[in-house]
Length: 586
Image (cartoon, rainbow, N blue to C red; front, top):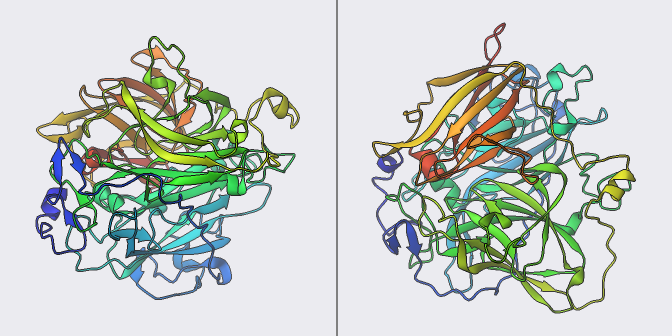
């Protein structure tokens, strides 16, 4: 359907190009520009601010519909009954903050050598603004409602489609606000997503709080339009959404918290690879269905930027924003990175990463291997470097096509981001890399415990990810939004076995609930940096067994490959959360 939808998109006179103004081999594009690295500073995306809030933070849309007429600015107001029957538990988690995001077309400079590029962006920027939110804890509600205005050009021609839906990956969010691929809306309309910012398990917790071991940190939001996710996200529709609680509290001076680097020293980094046409606009290869690779490596929307850093510790939130490349992150001088989180979940303890353990047999897994949509939070300590040192965050993954990396370390690394260490003496640094001693000072033995695994009564399901008759399939079928491939009973535990096909890597994402990996290829799996996840990376013909506890909301969610080219063609299924005693509300 993605190919059919772009049939009229091949004219070079429009703002964004069809692929064809650049050369391509196996889905690897070549841009007609020489881009000297480290000319631009790293952009730090602005933190999104709430708008004026009306009584009860209600929305103006009529009952029974989520899309409404576009209005320049409408306060969040109206009758409490207007949405109460549509947004699940809306009254229980009444929004305290209201936001407006305007999805629009804009121009953006990726590099001084490239003309300004047309992008689609949340608030007209790529990546979009960063959200900072807190969990509902200690009786302090903190739910958000976000209104998405679709202001994209209705007459757009080129790759992408001006019809959108936004997924907050992988927050514990009701399905009507999940950005389901089939819940899309067009130019001139808007949609409200209700984000309760609540812990999983709240509905069965006598205190209504939920399970603190299910706390998330680094989330992100992106377009999820059925058949066009790859194109719309490639055009720029993605950004960060950060969640905090009393431990991971965004305050390194707080003696009761983990004292992780915070404020200006907590830096989200989104990695994307792009291809540019002769006019400077993005080029997209419609015909490489294995996946597409760009030759220009971008961080936060700039090609190989630099960042001035002080001689102290920083937290970096590494996100592979796609569309298809796999990264293996390391430092150019072989210095360690201290991984503290995986897919938004704090690990029990920091894990040292990025060091070759056996120089005679270097292994890709010595680095931080990251498939599309995976996130890894790391701490880098720059205090050891002399003033004016230059050091680089690099990619060691060897990859020559969009289907998969070779699984080997590249002959030479690709620098992604240059760190320019300041020339000042060591600066005051109240942050810590958590240790047993620092945790004991706040009466803890871990940063975050893993949820308990209970296998006494589980439902088991099997899923095969494969190539069938030229299409990407799950259990032999392509995505149909009207077909429910699994009806999951609320408040149950399940074990899913995911099997990949040889020749491709599939970063598999299951919406809504986090999982824990029980085994890979039949071998019990307990890598210290794996922990709890929302994406499981199937490498080649690998098999993974993963555990879930499904809770709280009712309705429809998808599972899909997050190589978004595979997702659009059409490696995705619908599963529903159901209650045997009540019909779903959506």
